[in-house]
Image (cartoon, rainbow, N blue to C red):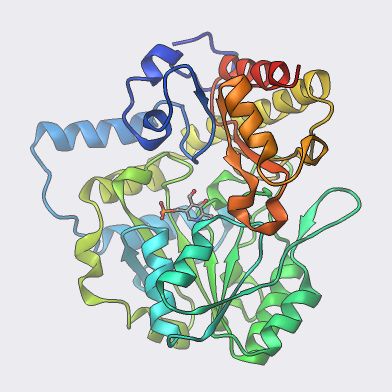
Length: 387
Ligand SMILES: Cc1ncc(COP(=O)(O)O)c(C=O)c1O
């Protein structure tokens, strides 16, 4: 382990991290510092390590059995973190948020129906629409004079007036890190009710709302429960993406009727380790999560200092949530010029902005869910790449 400032989570050194075989650590050669895909470098929460170790020791590697464990864990966590009263019986297990979104789209859309998304946004939103043979309609975010990206209610109003079948909401929004506020979400619920649109609220990053911001679950805003289904998971905040467990939550009978149409075999497709880890994380992982949020807040501030000192050409608006920073590198060129430059000359891998939609031309996404040392080295290399 590298040195740990007080209140901060430790991170293994690079040599140990390179022993990992997940996508983040397998995609690039060893001389590249990988800060792309949304995996974090912190060791697992001890409660998660314990439950997984116990399962391995007991050869407990069969099928997951979500009922009633997952609903109870989600309801407890939502109540404690966000004062959101979730009915444990209204929670359906899905293998991951991607599978959940695709299956919900299949449940509410016919092929050819329109589905609205708000780029720049998590790249699979584009491919999930393609996978379900629905039709993509873009209502891009709007960047204000203060740099903050917000939902564009005018564009959404125009898009919803075409009576799309669904809107995939990203809250908190990846890659811009915006936590949509109650007013905006209420307006979305109103528009959705007016035009008969089902809102699939991808709230996977909700546990990662950082100090200074507050998460509003879509289903808690007036009318939200009538038109929306929330997808939640412990996988981003507790780094469990490979274990495969997420939940679809409803708060009204019309939306419950939609989750009732999810494939009945879906419950057998969740990962048993994912279920065990999710239960442990949501039930006993609160203290660790608080330490993570403190650490990410410090890393966010560090990144701000490093960019100001070493890369003044790069602009950013610090995210309100997530461990992902959306960096405006348009001064270095459009398209993925900056991404290519940082990779080729600096040996730092970031996520190219164009993957998030046309609005991402000239931008990159940097994953700061890592140690102080690695973040420092990454920005040093990025700055050196420009000389
Ligand atoms: C907004 C968003 N939704 C969904 C996912 C993927 O979630 P899952 O692995 O549960 O499909 C990610 C992963 O980073 C994400 O950022």
